[in-house]
Amino acid sequence: MTGPARCIRLRGEAEYREDGEGLLEKPGDAVLVRRGALRSVLMRCPDGCGETLVVNLDPRAGKAWKLDMRAGKATLYPSVWRDGGCGSHFIVWRGHVLWCDRFEEGNVEPSYDAAALERRVLEALRRRELRGAEQIAVELDEIPCEVARAGHALARRRLAVCGSGRQRDWFALA
Image (tube, rainbow, N blue to C red):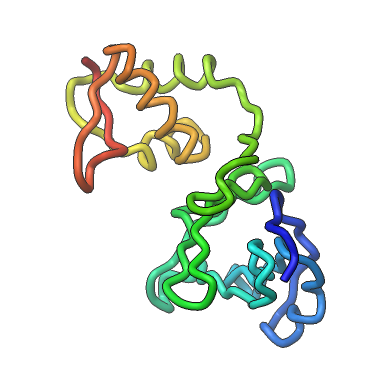
């Protein structure tokens, strides 16, 4: 076992899982599996346990994650939480691995213009009707987790309100 990865290293694309496995060398290495459309992300578990994770991107094959590739850096959402094996729980955000459990110390969030995004999110909240971060992100062509962070920052300043429970990342004008 090696130490935890702090970033994702995209190693290429493959048509099938077995083709991509050979490209995974270190914790955090990842390969996109594409057969016509993106099917999955293969990833050497970033915690260093040595296992290969298969993260489904195809909603036709069951629960699916979403992948955003801005400037060649992966954002994968929602978080990856392994039910078995090492039990890792992490977020992939603009190529960085942010740990949600035992490796949190040392997390480094990627840089982006949070103030500018907050202004854009506030403008998108035209009514006092709750809207999801994902819907707002599509409208603004932004990453949903960044829109959610901006929405929560606006709520802390009482410029917006946020939902609760399943609507935790839903926002409206205050």
